[in-house]
Image (tube, rainbow over all chains, first blue to last red; front, side, top):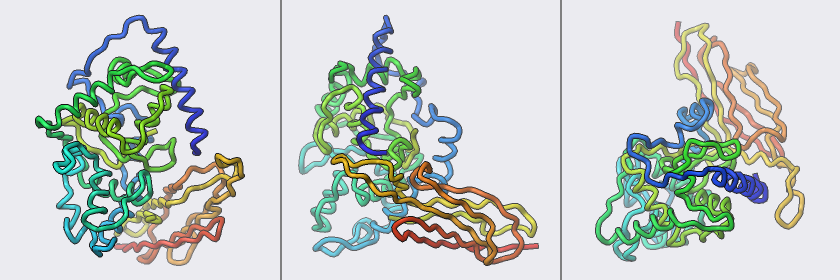
Length: 267
Length: 107
């Protein structure tokens, strides 16, 4: 499905969102109690769940396979493969994706998994960074994230991370765009209700990168966030911008304890 | 791009009905879309999928533009003898891909 079509869909959703929220007299703001947290998986149809559950029908595994090949392929001026430093990803990368975004001590700010992989490309392999949403970057991310399947999300929030987490939360609660909606108004206050033909999920990023049926391909959490921003008719932040990373950080922190599903399938 | 994922049970009893699954990586570009600058994007789809079991055809499908990207097929056959199950996808722009898997049949 092309970008134009996606935009049309996004607009339709956002109009529906405006109507839905307009009609709702009482909006109870607030966080979702831990007992009521649901992965997007639990809102999916039986068929889509089956597609995710079986590794031979989950198309995300095509990227995982590609990522496994890239992991062992030498790249860059250093002539090193990921495996030369990190060894077997099935052991060394277990649980890693469940801890990202994580603090990058050198930069003094959080980086997400894609940025961390690209730092390795630049510094370790001395190879050019991979472009956002490129097949290679998605494949490597999917391969690393696959090793954390079923591992509970655990974001370490220490003192230096707190301001970024707070900034992410502020963004989550901030109304924006022509439709003047915040993320929280849909995903905290109205999850489980219908937005056009779709159920509003709670926005727990448990399965990224995800194979989205609407995209007919794999995509990162940042792509999904930009999608939502276009939906509320806000100008999406650029890939890799601090705003998106802060939001990713907040969302992963908010989903703390939920098991990873990467690569998940979503409608 | 990793090209295909096929799944055939490694072992089966003679006469058992076995499920075979095949997932292939392909954009399945319909040919009906236009790019952002208005040019028609040429059709690029898989036209045919064939599965043979020790050389005998057990499944064949014709694909059309309405089929989603990364087509997935699941079907069944009867395990008759040990051997090789071969999968072939052919399509536009000279697309041709073959994968195979072996199956052992026990009495």
